[in-house]
Image (cartoon, rainbow, N blue to C red; front, top):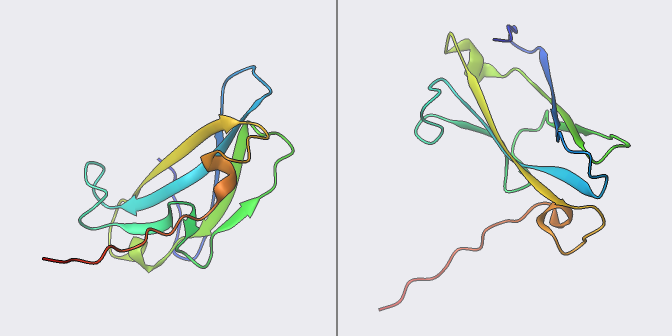
Length: 116
């Protein structure tokens, strides 16, 4: 566990443990929830599909593609729950593969119309 107070910054670093220098990682989705088994019902999106949802989210540059670094601020969500869990989804891509998910950034899902 990592103990924080309201309005304190949370710093996160994810790393890829692989010696292949031609790989990079991308933070696709990070969600906070008071239930470690349910990140849908009562959840707070920090980043979803590469789109930042929390205004305090900041990405930190890393000269190494094997690291993804970011921070966000402990939010009001934490004050209502004794424990909050963070679940993040990362994508591994080929370094310099600009058609890969890692280089496309925010992907907003378009809504489909319904018809008879």
